[in-house]
Image (cartoon, rainbow, N blue to C red; front, side):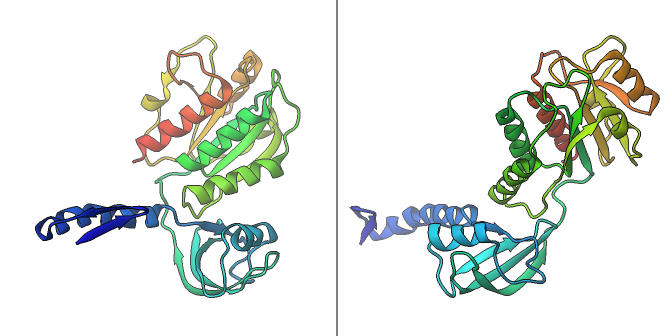
Length: 267
């Protein structure tokens, strides 16, 4: 028997065929499974058509044709198995075959509120990785020592959508633009509230302060940290002071470390 892979071939004895083909079959099925392309169409439940950008990717980049299979999410937990019914590069129409609700991939609600770094690339990196790891909401805070006064939330949403599709998730986190620190702190939250700061005073490690299965809201300050007045205001409003460890972390690293800590504890 001759086994061919690409432009190479091997002569195999019959008794070795099963031994050789079994791991190859497993490898190929794994590749197929984990390279599934997921498309984002927030209105797929009422309009069986991909948005223009997704249509272009499906038809022009992936060269999908009529009756080709694809998977679509609305970003709210639903995943649809569908086939292309009209392969148009601006208005790719689909026919839904199956609809499934993706179960929650983590046990408790998580909200990260972070003062953005001066470099927008670093914040895009944080959003991408936070979506991959898992978070329900991200808010950008305007603090006393913030290095940015605004942020283009539409760009962040594109990064989040891309990360959601890449990690095969069906839920898109809620992203909120620049919000005044005191305004945000005064808002109610039904869960544990933490502020990770570098100032004086007793602080537990986040991994010791947090208990699994509890909704969590975590504040991450700018490179210059929260001001003493901001820390005091947060504590007065029920926030618990926590530490992320002994290392000195950049803003986006601290935010991602907090996100990862909560998700690990909830596994």
